[in-house]
Image (tube, rainbow, N blue to C red; front, side, top):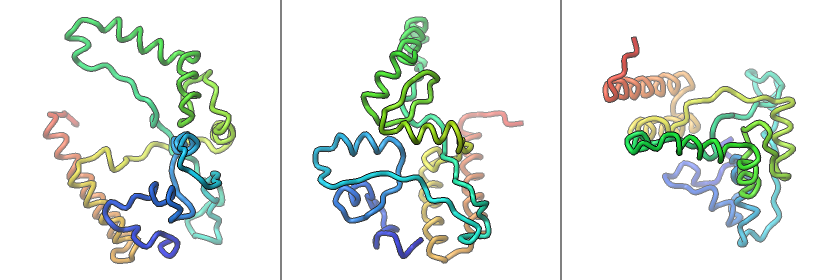
Length: 203
């Protein structure tokens, strides 16, 4: 993979979205949200399109099963929640009514379609025409992978160390086994800190 990446791929703060927009890289891996942004950007002066991740075959890797990788699912679009202030101010029924309104298919569909940036995960909501085929492929064939622990869900200190380990692994500085062991230690370290900080009973 390394020979095909931008020369500064391992540099801190490398902005691959900017590189793509400036035509410094030919391919940019991202999610469905990028589609709407690119279509709406008046400064995009080149032709572009999307394609799904190529299927890795047994000839490519001994770990491959010859099937297309399922996309990673989960709530990646607008996420609604009620703050504790809602209860303190005695407006829980009003907040619930509002959430019911914005998540009803006929209302949510309008917002999702207008922004054109995400695949809907509400039953009965139509999808932006540009994203209709990917949604069909997911729901009718590929399915969705289980959620993974994204780096932004853990502490900053551990996240930065894990990023460095991934870079070392890609550069063959550490083996796959060493990288897995080091990352596991950092995840457990963060878990212990979170348990203590929040007073969780995990027994």
